[in-house]
Image 1 (cartoon, rainbow over the protein chains, first blue to last red):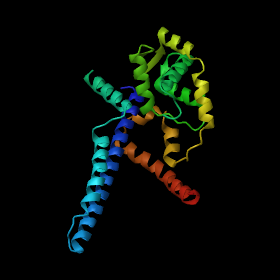
Image 2 (spheres, each protein chain N blue to C red; image 1 turned 90 degrees about the vertical axis):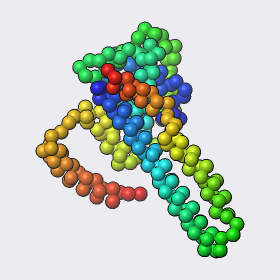
Image 3 (cartoon, rainbow over the protein chains, first blue to last red; image 1 turned 180 degrees about the vertical axis):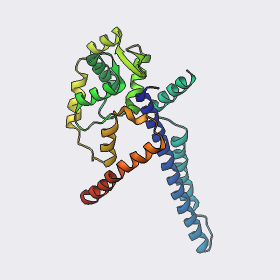
Image 4 (cartoon, rainbow over the protein chains, first blue to last red; image 1 turned 30 degrees about the vertical axis):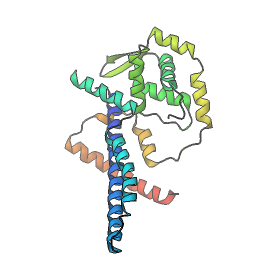
Length: 90
Length: 152
């Protein structure tokens, strides 16, 4: 395979890994903060579950981030993936 | 890159460079473009290769395998496209000149130094790996000292 194509495919893979790692970091922070909020809620005697508001609001953001990390791709990456599959078939 | 190039300008600029250089490989076209644009813009194969593929799909470039590398050549249709937009490289170069320079990182310098080395994808035997690592150890130590001194 052409060196230039190989470098492009590696760059795409690196970009994907980076995107996914950024999502996992976001998810870890989301879980840690919300566990803390639930802990505070329980410590102060429970009652109205106010922790659900940040959990759901931020949760939408986390889901959207997950979608961009795993489901959506930059048009250049779609072209590269298609080419990589085509070259693999040859 | 998206701010520097307007819609379709990257492809057109690559076509201009390919027309200037004659039949050549992707690295030469990429470096030719970086030279003509100047400024702090640093292209990468990840952005340039899809654009070359799109130009091939559109019939403006033709790619032929030549001694393990793909060589690109502008087609007659590509030459018409180049002639129709003669100023695109100057316009992008003007924009690049006016753009503020981004901070330079160690990674960016290393990428620039080794980006066009065809040796990158060559396989190494275990003794060669050891030798390469021993060559890099003093360099890495020096790099750590340098960044420790000069870190902003």
